[in-house]
Amino acid sequence: MEIVYVYLKKRSEFGKQCNFSDRPADLNVDILPNPKLAAQFVERNPVDMGIQCSVSMSEHEANTERFEMETRGVNHIEGGWPKDVNPLELEQTIRFRKKVEKDENYINTITQLGVIMEHCIKQNNAIDIYEEYFDDEEEVEVTEEASSAKTINVFRDPQEIKRTATHLSWHPDGNRKLAVAYSCLDFQRAPMGMSHDSYVWDLENPNRPEMALKPSSPLVTVEYNPKDSHVILGGCYNGQIACWDTRKGSLVAELSTIEFSHRDPVYGSIWLQSKTGTECFSASTDGQVMWWDIRKISEPTEVVILDITKKEQLENALGAISLEFESTLPTKFMVGTEQGIVISCNRKAKTPAEKIVCTFSGHHGPIYALQRNPFYPKNFLTVGDWTARIWSEDSRESSIMWTKYHMAYLTDGAWSPVRPAVFFTTKMDGTLDIWDVMFKHSDPALSLKVCDEALFCLRVQDNGCLIACGSQRGTTTLLEVSSGLSTLQRNEKNIASSIFERETRREKILEARQKEMRLKEKGKAEGKDEDQRDEELATNLEEMVAKAEKEFFDIIFAELKKEEAEALEKKAKAPKKLSLEADEEEEEGEEAGEEEGSDEEKSA
Image (cartoon, rainbow, N blue to C red; front, side, top):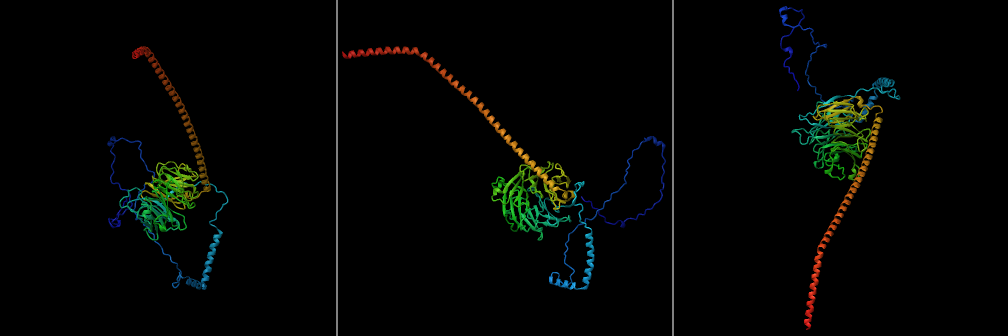
């Protein structure tokens, strides 16, 4: 809330003028003390009284008019030529020079100027202000000043509906300008009437943006072309790739067609180091990396699907959040994914399966920042979840260095372009951390509270002095770090290289040790399994033998019982058989007698 005072009249225009003068004090009333009233009071002894030692001051406020700066161009034309001589015509200028050189005044003037110039040159030769003394001697280590940073400028989103500053890009020619992409990244929660514009700011004029970029959909990423500073590349929220030429105005110069573009927001876009300077590539959470040529940007020239199973299936692809490309390694590029995995790819591979070289997994969430060390490309920095990690391409199992787990989520990170051991990270609590690996590993060398809202992106200037941080409310803060953090220290390259190599060797030793332990555990597990199997076989054999013995004896006992029963039955049936045999013999005798009688009758 701003307090505004409005004065309708000047003080001299109303009221009577006050005249003051010095005079002695006058006694108007003198009331003597009443001793009778003293009984009603209690004497305080001692009496404590606070006395202010400092001089009493009064505060005065005054509202001043806000000064608005405005940038204006100056048209410079070569002067000093007469009206009848056209400076663009070479013949006329040569003819006029010859005419002037023949004049006597010309020779006298040149002679006088030559004396002055000779005097200046002799002064410069006498004292070399750029001379470095004691160059051969070793430098003595001096106690350096404490690391610090201060705010230079603040660039606020001019729109009423504030949006998140999602990406930043420095102007490649002198870093005098800063391009900022504004977008609302909450899915389907963009407020009604939200502007799609992004802006280019002049560092010396924070009141008003120098230029507006007007895309069809809000920009998520923005990048200046390193070869042509007039060309700006942008990745849109709807997946399209847009290109601007600042000489032609705020409208889009080239735009990719929707059917050939990404299906999700473009979270990464980088220019390639090519002869034409018109090639770039982009990545999105739809799992695709696309190569573009802005001269024919309607459709991509090449597409890589980030399927680590190497089956080239889009439904299995991992969503890309960050991109990395190093010009010294033109065939390689790296992608940070939503799943916390870094994918190293080879663009020149002959088959699609060979394009994905290897993966590095170490984060629990999306990798918001991925950047190679500008001095040692084998080492790269990743920022995701609650930590920042430094990796080496020689060690794929684990990172070689990492920060502690913070209470706030990390959102972005970048290496210092001038110091190989320094990197920067931003957090959701609005804090910028500056880490110096040479100084200490456990805590940042400097932690600075930039703003109250969350910081979403950062970008470091090429000279390492200025850092731009974009926040959730669209505020871009420009910070200047102290000289200790932006100046290459003595022997820093060798020390940083030895630190990275030492940690890489340590990780390799730990990896070998872990593999050995895993093999031992596997062998022990296999040995235990064999012992368990032998025990199980032994117990099974005993059980089977006991069971077979029981069945055998049961069968034998059943047979014995059966035989006993049969024997008893035979004994019981034996006398009956004898009586039956006697009866049968008698019957047979009677039958024989009857047959003989019948034969005698027949013969008679």
